[in-house]
Length: 204
Picture 1 (cartoon, one colour):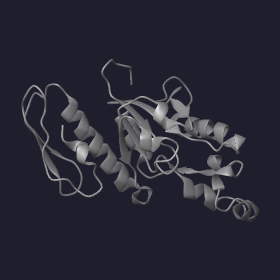
Picture 2: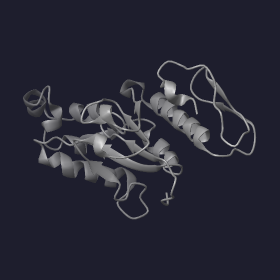
Picture 3: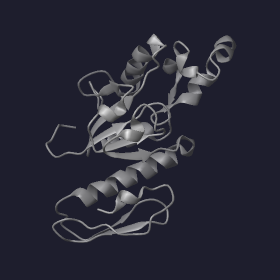
């Protein structure tokens, strides 16, 4: 998306959020699987073997239309190939040209809390994610495509709540069993019962 002052900044973790880490483990040869057991992220080339998580790519294609979006990941300090493999993975699945939604938008850091922004979607609190100054949105990897659907609906609900004006009264569904009503005022007001897995800061 084109950068626009006031657009909310969204960071997305890579491993276990965009990328199916287990798929890389499953493709290691037997020797490497035994050698790197318990610290698979140190296995050379493992990141080049991974698949996207179901729902990740189409959801990100949609979210980047509404948020200033970056991939914010960590690469193993002891595995030099991880740094290049992550870039190659982004090139493979999102393209490497200027028309890519993540063109020059890949950040690799062990200190995620140093990145200023509004939202961070992450499956863990390590490497500074737990100290992120914006809102940390936890991602449950095992839920796959359902988890991406939840994250998208949650973020779009937040976006509606942050808008200064909404032209019409609208009913918004965010997650199973949750219906939000956006009320016409100069600032939208969101109310509703909170489902399991959602952060309580949903109130706009």
